[in-house]
Length: 460
Image 1 (cartoon, rainbow, N blue to C red):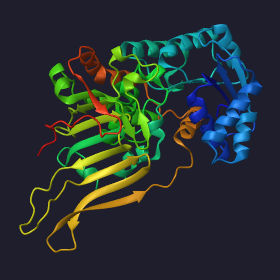
Image 2 (cartoon, helix red, strand yellow):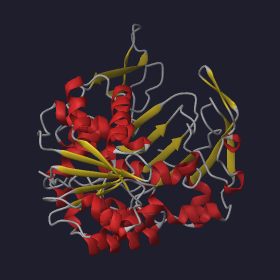
Image 3 (cartoon, rainbow, N blue to C red):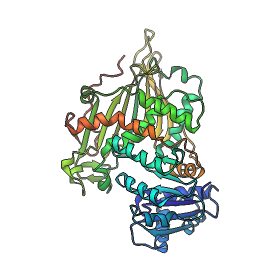
Image 4 (tube, one colour):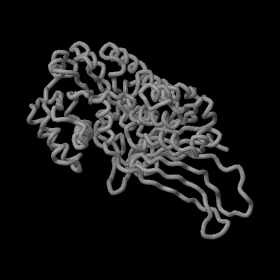
């Protein structure tokens, strides 16, 4: 296990909100020993004492439920170095020391190439690992360039392209539920499943992230990485094992099977929109274009929806709908697997037999199955829902990811060819949207999003 972690960009929101609490959770669970060392590195003109005060405040805000002793241990193990991540000499001073180091780039994606190049010139101790946040690159060309830079720095097995969605309990339960239950896997195919909706709708608006979000948009921020990863887990063939190679190979198969989208497909099967002024719950939300730091001329979308089909034996004709949006009326974060209608209902029943839906709730984490049954009146069909709450995990998602990085378990990170293939799926969409082939719609903040289209996929 690596016992030195350097976080580049350590004074940002990612570190304060997720990485520090993740480390404190590891300490509380007994996964970090007393000799563990954390070094924060960033451009701010701080010293170690100032960083520790900041870290203490962040842990108090975002990890108050963890033991004070665990939080204190993380803070006391930390130090700070001011550094320009593009300066090899400064980077070399930060990573120098005894034994391997895990270098975590908690940085904007556009800075990754410069930081990786500086690490390459500085040199990393043998056995070191490098961690990169999503999105990996800004398009296919930049992802390929970044992969080449990383290949010159460390072996592929030492590169962790992390996506914290893969460490969420319910996301892993997508695989566990379908593969460990005899009654599900035989019907996990196009003959029985009409549609799969993979949704991450948020009531949160921009929340001060214009500097990053306006250059990315909903498609790059959520759909190209998080939601495509969920698609892989839902649609993949059963792997031989959950080892690094087997799991990643089957995920890559899914991405390679995505039917290429023509411009006509993109016009018909994709949507983009941005929110106007409105009210979400008890708060007024300004229009996206009025948010501080937003350039209205970019036409950045805050809502994106794409329908995909897979050209393989298991899924012909099933529609996979990926959707994400901000400033919506309610949070809806789930994978909804919609089964086809039954072929025949006995005569004499009133009411409608709705399709069965298996729902994997992502936040909060739960599992639900929508069925049809008999109501209080005989021969009357009514909807039924069976629900199960999932026990809280021992570690939060970022705690699990950090443990995998330190232990060298890359099964839940994304391999280089997989990262490139994910861009290939959506590059045609980005290209068509840049030509305005798909108009950008609008929806009021606090609504359910743009008006729904008439669906033409997944019909019986």
